Amino acid sequence: MPGQMIARGVCRHLLSLGFVTVEELVPAPGLRVDVMALGPKGEIWIVECKSCRTDFVSDRKWQGYLDWADRFFWAVDADFPAGLLPEGSGLILADAYDAEILRMPPATPLAPARRKAVTAGFARHAAVRLQALRDPGARLG
Image (cartoon, rainbow, N blue to C red; front, side, top):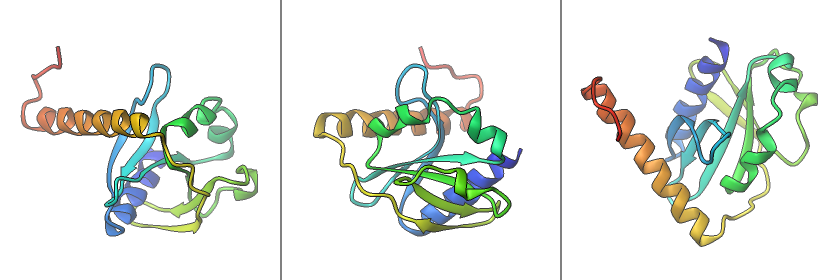
């Protein structure tokens, strides 16, 4: 899947910057972000990976993600028409092996209570994923 390959490159690059990541995290009912990253200073970034014009045009939920991160990015491959992407959001060029941040978006810091909730959700999501790797039959109650 092209979007998953973009996400892999994004996650590799963010790790090189000191960020840990999880994919397909649900910050609130009805929302599912492609990549959420937690930085070394507690910063929270969301990255939406788009593999083609149709994938971008059909995404009607992305603005709902803005309330759940300090910075919001689009990640695309070299063939994506980047001019479609909204100004004011970040831009990452990625492939399956690495990525490069081309445009850093402005920071919109989360409120402390929201940051705490997002960080706890991130930790729980990561822990459930890790446990599922070790014990595929385990289920969260």
